[in-house]
Length: 501
Image 1 (tube, one colour):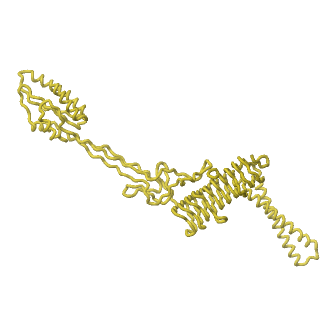
Image 2 (cartoon, helix red, strand yellow):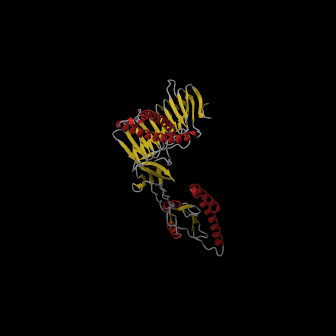
Image 3 (tube, helix red, strand yellow):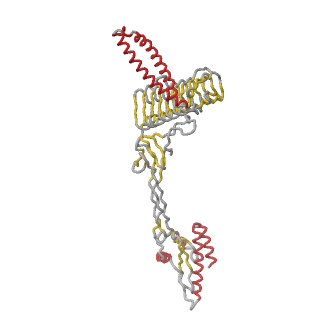
């Protein structure tokens, strides 16, 4: 009997490998049952014993197996109907394999076969979010460190329109319930909702299936949430037909700016095209012109409280509160509170006026065709200009005073012989002289203040790999004209003189 059980068990394990452990455990249980029946059958008067179906459940109750033990001492056999009844009384009620039972029952005694298979629960799907935009941080345009800006790729800001889909949201899908062979329900694993990265100026829409932009603006990520800086977006060009544009906040222009248009924004301004004839002002941020400034003399102006970045600056007047980063400067005027960086691309400055509060760093000044550039470094850009202006105004005022002195002296010498007309003229000349003397005092006081600023030691420098003449250099009150071709220049002030190393 044990040999037959081993043979039948091997066949069952080969046919149902997923239940190998269950079949192996069933074989051991059957051997014990056989020993018990044999012992009982051999005791007493050898009473007859009927054929006995033995059932076995897997530990998870997902499968049930059976085996018919033969009758002993002339006992009765069994029928399929009785076998099915015994199966029902054993509590095996779900997933009964009737066709398998009918087929396998014909193999007779000591044959191991499955009688029921449970239905495992089907897992559901957790909720999921599919992000359609990159996770770009809430960056400021201004380059805080380094001397170069990458103009080969578009600026890393993501403009977005109100109603645009930021993320697709898939709701969780519950699994289906299973059941073991005893009819006990088996719940599916729990599913979880997806965490939707909803931040400022975004909203859930489309029946909960999408995260939408709640405003026009720039999309960014903060604390792992998508947020939007609400701002004005102009996708195409901006020209004279739009006239003057004044907004609060940031501004993104996808095309060119030309035709004499005037733009003012309180935040960052990004222009993905070119700037021609225009006046562009950022009162509280940085200006970036991706395709360069190709202006017209006297008609192109860019002013920012922060940094100005442009791949090319030609025929333009630039005023930046911090620094300027570009690749080429030609026939332009630049004033900035920090450093002018022209360190990438051509790295060239030609025929331009630059007033830098700190330094000018570039690869090349001038070209083979000649020309003249004028640089002032190391002081606030208005100080050298103010010093020159005040000196000129003071000289002009002194010249006028000297011209007034001669007629006043001549009229006073007449004494009592002066006529009423001459006396009126004298009074008028004296009044003018007093006004100009007062003006001279005010100019002298202002010049003294500027001189004090210029007396402070400056660390401003002009550095370049190649210099073509001519270059006029001013550091404080010191001036120098460079009329020779120089290489690897480091122009700075040292002991009351300008040094070119």
